[in-house]
Every structure is written in structure tokens, then in C-alpha cells.
Length: 361
Image (cartoon, rainbow, N blue to C red):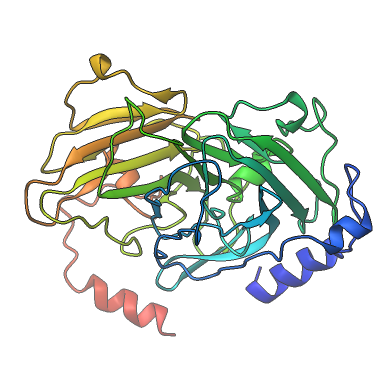
């Protein structure tokens, strides 16, 4: 399916209107924060709100790898965000575009940053061709705000807007994703990161000079296709970090002597042993909260299981360009195929020219 057809069909199916659900009146919708849309795949500069940050001290904002942080609007002491679930086209690497579903123009959606104790109001507008919800993975919140379709909320219908509101009760790193037709919607790229900064100095959360975050995600995009296969369980062939693959990934940059924090979330269907060259690190946090200092130890590889977040910290004390990768070797390949025979010992001289002539026809 071509990009134009993808948007025509999905946008026609949504027929977005100003109607609402969950008691959001038309008058209230008129006061919605304007959704911020960003389609570029470059790593955006950190976003820090002007003036007072809400419930606590100013914080060092995170940098989302090949992504961005969503600005908020202050409304009578409440931080308001507007997420738009919609079809997007994501450039996974130069020249490699994939039809996905995401939020506010991208997959993954924008990172949400708040401060512990903030009251947060999130307007979620559905421009998909089917109902959806958002689950705030790892958050302490009222049951009706947990975002599980058919359990504690009705799904957000096509063209409708739902409002989630709760207090960010504990600092840490979390994720968000649908809990409605998860097999389809997460396979199409619907997910995002959430960071809650501590409202004051925390005994288990150190200050750092660099703070990065990204999500591990995976897609099954057959050769020649532009839309992922959604019924794949394990045989994914595109293993991505924030829906980008090498050589499309930006570097995580630090000055010599910087203390660096990297927050890694896994919303794929398998685990990933993340290995960093050139340094030793400690796992200082999970999506359950900061790790007590007596439970930390030096590592060079940490396994991030399905649905988990691991926060690692290290001192950048060795100059150079150091690799960081999943240590499952087939995950560093892209795109990986299962039907390619072993080519060891095959005389492939002249093969490139033959392929070039075939492709150029």
C-alpha cells in the first residue's frame, strides 16, 4: 500500500469530529490544548518549561533518542497535554519509510515529562480507524484512569476524545501504550515514554549531566512492503530503538567525565540483553522505582524483559565512540530474513553488479 493510499483510507475511516466521550462536553473540547505535532526523526533538544515547573524544583530534562518531549499547558495548576492517536509515516532509516500508528505525528509518541506531585490532565483524541485507549504503564493512579478497555473504561471511539486525570505520585520512568486491540495497535507502533522527576533531592536518584531515554520496539515488514504485519508473534525482522534502525540512529553524546543516565523501555515481544562497550554501569532504577544502593552492582550487560524498564547509570570516563546494542546477534541485523541460505564458501564475485542491473531494470 502506498503512503497516499494509507492516509486516504485511514483518515477517511476516522472522519474526525468534535464529538466526545467520558463526559467531555463540546464546550470543554473548544478549550482543548492545541496538539503539538512533530514528524521529523531527528533527536530534539530537551524541552524545559519556562518559569515554575509545577510541584517541585526545576529539573534536568531528558533527551529522547530520535524523539522529543511534549510541551504542556498550565491550566489553574494542572499540567495539560493533548495526545492524538493517528496514522503516521515513520522514517526508520534514510530511504526506509514505514506506515505506522502513533501519537502526534510520530511513533513512538512524544515523551511526557512531569514532576512528582503534579496533577496531570491528558486529552486523548482518537484519529485511528478503530477504538483505542491509553494505559499508563507502571503508574499509581485511580482505577478508572488505568486505560484498560472493557475493564475500567469504555474504549475511545473513532473521532472521540477521552480525558485522563491523575496525580504523578512517585518519581521514576514509565511507559504508555494502548490496552485495546493491543496485538494490532502495539504492532503498528503505538507507545511512548513517561518520566516523573523527583520534587526534591532524592536519596536514591542522583543528579546527572546527561539523561537519555528510548523504547525498544519491533516490526515485521516484509520486503517490498510499507506496512507491518500485525499478527506476528515472534518472527519480527526489524528490531528498532524508538522506531529507528542503524544507520538512522543518533548517538548518545557525553563529555569526558559526565555522569550519564539511560532509561530503556521494552515493548517488544522478547527480552533484550543491552550491552554497552567501554564502561561499566549500574542498574539504578526499574519501572517499579529506584533500586536501593545496596542492591546495585557493576555490569556491562543488563537484560530488559518484555514490559520492563531498566535505568542504567555510568561515568563517561573513556574517550571514544563506543557501541551500545542488544547482544542477541540477530537483533543487530536489519532486515533479517529466515529463508536466506548459508553463503559461506560461495564465490560471490560480480554478484553486486548483477543485482544492480536487476534492480535498475
